[in-house]
Structures are given as C-alpha cells and as structure tokens.
Image 1 (tube, each protein chain N blue to C red):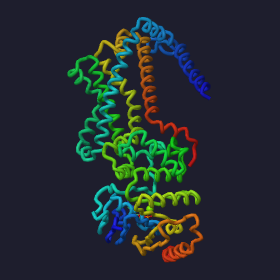
Image 2 (cartoon, rainbow over the protein chains, first blue to last red):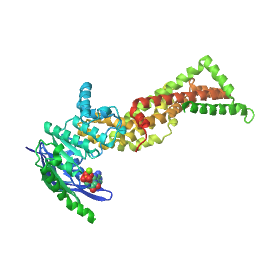
Image 3 (cartoon, rainbow over the protein chains, first blue to last red):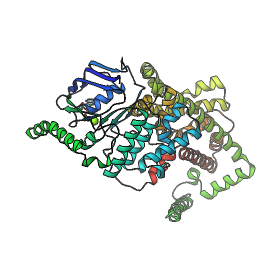
Image 4 (cartoon, rainbow over the protein chains, first blue to last red):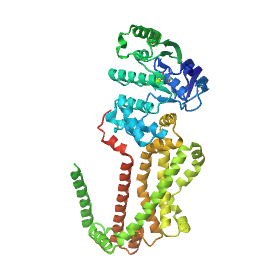
Length: 260
Length: 257
Ligand SMILES: Nc1ncnc2c1ncn2[C@@H]1O[C@H](COP(=O)(O)OP(=O)(O)O)[C@@H](O)[C@H]1O
Ligand SMILES: [Mg+2]
C-alpha cells in the first residue's frame, strides 16, 4: 500500500498573547492508504493539532505534512473532519445537517432524502430526523456529525474522540459500523481517542503521544487482522496482551502527572 | 392565562382613557389634550369620509417601500462587507462618517433631488433603515462561526454554499433584530418627510390639524400612526417566525442544562 499521509518533522507552535505554545514537536508518522490509525495520549498533547494540520486548517510551523505526495496547502478536500465539538448547524434539523454535504455535491432532493434516511438509520437517529440539535443529547449530536461526515464519503476520515459521549453498547455498535464501512470502502482513518481499549480494538496501528511538548513516543502495531470480531474481543488473548502493552506505554505519563 | 392578560391590558387602557376623559378640562385645558370622545369622533368622521384610509395608505406605502428598499440594500451590503474584510476596513471611516450624520438632516437635499412626492419620503426612510439593517447584518456576518465555515469548506463548499448554508442562516437573527428596530424609524422617515413637505399622508393630516388648532385631530392622527406601527411590527414578527423555524423549537424546548 502506498503512503497517503506523511508527517516529516512537523512542529506547530501557536503564538498567543501569553507567548508561544508548542503544541507539537517533530512529528514523524507515515499513514498508508487504507490504514486505521488511532492516536492516544494525555489531553493537550497535540492530537487535535495533528488532525488540523492534516485537514489544512493551518500549516506546520516547521517541517512538512504531505497528503498523497503533495504538501497540504489550504483546506484539504480529500479529508472529512469530525471535530471534537460537533459544530452542527443549529438552524437545521438532523436530516438537514446530514444532507448538507449532499446539497453541496448537487444531489437531487429525492436522492438526498434516500441517502439521509439510510445514514440516519445507520447511526440510530431515524426517529430524530426532524429534531433540531438543541433537542439532542451529546451522544446523539456526535452520531449526527458522524452521519454527516459519512454522507460525502471522503477518502480519509479524521475523527476526534467521536465516540466519547456514547454508552458502552452504542459505542461498540458504532465501532463495528465504522470498521465495516472503512473496510468495505477502503478508507484511511486517523482516530483520536481517550479510551485505550478502543484504541487497540479498532486500530491497525496506534500512535502514542507524550506531553510537553507533543511528540509521538511510539507507534504500536495491532496485528489483530482486518476482519475482526469486536464483540468477542475481550476474550482474545492477543487483544488483552496488546492493551496491557499500551497501558505500560502510557505509564510514564501517569507517573509524570503524579509528580506534577 | 392568555385571556387574563388581555383583560388586564384592557383594564389599563380603559383606565388611561377614563383619566384622560375626566381630567381634560378640569386639570388641564382641553385645548392642549382634547378628550378621548372627541378624538374618537374625529376618527369616526375620517373613517366615514374615507380620508383616514387614503392618508394612512400613503404613509404605509412610503414607510413600507422605504423599509424594504433600505433593508434590501442594508442586507446586501452587510453580507458583502461582512465577507470582504479588506474592503470593510477600507470603507470603515466613510461608513462611520455617514452613519453619524443625522439622517433627517438629509431631507432638504432629498426634496431638492426628488421633489415633495412619495419618492422623497421613500428615500429618506430607506436611508434611515439602511444603516440599522446594514450594521446588524454586518455584525451578524462577522460573528458567524469560523469553525462551521471551515467544516463546510472541507466538504467542498464554494463561497456561494458558505453564504447560503452558513452565513445567512446564522446571521439572520441579527438581521431580524435590525429589521425590528427599523420599524419605528421607517415611520419617522415617512411621517417627518410628510411634515416637512406634503399634501398627503398621516404626517400631513397631523400638521394640518395642528395648523387648525384641532387638538382632537392631532391625537386622532397620532392614533392612526401608532396603529400603523403595530401593523408593521406584527408583519416583521410573522416573517421572523416563518424564516427562523428553529428559534421556535429552542423557545419551546423545556429548559435543561
Ligand atoms: N488555537 C490555539 N491557540 C493557542 N493554543 C492552542 C490552540 N489550539 C491548541 N492549542 C494548544 O496546543 C496544545 C495541544 O492542543 P490539542 O492539539 O488540542 O491537544 P489534544 O487534542 O491532544 O488534547 C494545547 O496545549 C493547547 O492549549
Ligand atoms: Mg483534542
């Protein structure tokens, strides 16, 4: 598989009124086409910053971010970005929000309606198509944002803690749904999560960030196979082993936080 | 709940009218304040002769046409400058200079340009409404979430999509705030224009009654102006409801944090 996203010594420093803040330093990471990479690390270590650079919201201060061999320059139209805050359009219903990218793509009204219903069904929001975002719970808003993202089927999905607000069962269902979509359509995924079990369960590889300033400490291979049974995962000895390794990898940061 | 509210309001209105009726001629000379019964009589006479509707229709037309024209230009330029930051920066001192000018002071100029017909009142009204709508629209456009715009652009949105799908819907609350405060100013434009130079309209009715020392006529004309303002306000509220359906669900939503 070819390299799709390449970070070469990418660093980002924000200039703020209180002085510069170094969000990422010397990020080196290569993501292959069709790969599912999870990003874990303490809060504030630059995970969202990495997704922002991939989407072209801003360029790295030094170093390079290449997408499909070319430096990312301005908004990267090949990626879909589900941000940490859902940023739904508050004046549109759930159906209207999911339909936005389809309107932009110029689909007819009937095509849009069919596709929106299909997507809402998938994320379990069929009954809420006519509700406004203000009437939804946090988890429902996230699912709506996910449906909107999948509506236009971008080549690469950038997901920033997409399932954080979901209950365990729903989260498992969404994880399976996402993996199967990614699998069938051959998407590339960068997936930020706080949940170490999730980081292992759904990933092909897991990048571990460390704080102060944000760098990637290690990238863990997750050789659990492309076709995997997420429901029975807890009983898979390889999975248990990998999760333990990830916990160990994260341990230095935990001790660091105790010391602070 | 609702009928009770109406009853209370009605009671207050009747109270005011009674105090007016019986203090006039006792506490204050009737020449200055007239009497509700006399005002009603004048109104009845004007309604009977058709004068009231004729003059009210003219003022309503001027106010409405000026309001629409000012609102349309205000919204358009507000959108344009709101999106073109550089241009807005260049034009800022000119806009502020023009904004600080008391718009009614332009009336003599408009009389020179357009004569004393309807056009002059329409242009005067439009000029006043323009600034209120423009400044609100501009502020609304500038406060649109940049994150939402970025997310739409990642979806492949062009500027036209950004404007129609994000900028206008999220600025529309501001636009309507501008429209709402414009309503009384639209009537100021029309009525003051008529007071200055006209032989038609409620402003003319007002000034000609005053010239005849007909206090009841003055109050009758004022009543008609208030009714017109209420009508225009109602129109704007109906339009706001129709164009912002999501506001209603937000209002009706049971409170929770
Ligand atoms: N727009 C910004 N301006 C200034 N500092 C920022 C900005 N965005 C993020 N940061 C800082 O960059 C660091 C990394 O942020 P972020 O990538 O959001 O972390 P994470 O997503 O891993 O929690 C944090 O210290 C944060 O305060
Ligand atoms: Mg983050």
